[in-house]
Length: 87
Image (tube, rainbow, N blue to C red; front, side, top):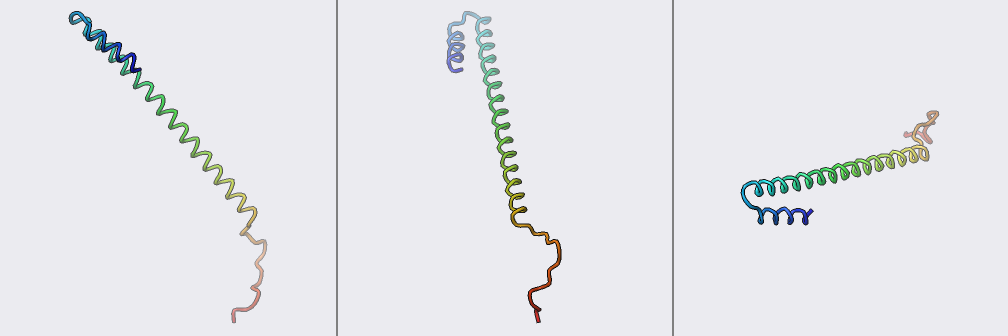
């Protein structure tokens, strides 16, 4: 990208007349447009990666909660009497 920018600037410096200057400006705008598209693609990829990471983390936490629930059940099938009276 930097090389294309340098070439466009070089073409602008060597331009003859107004038409060549306009062409160099168009080249610069094209390069900037391409850079913007590349940055947007990178941002989209990064957002997808972060979303995937969050989903994986949530799934891992859900699995851990289920394993804890099965290993240490809190629901009793019956109400057991207290081991001794409080009084």
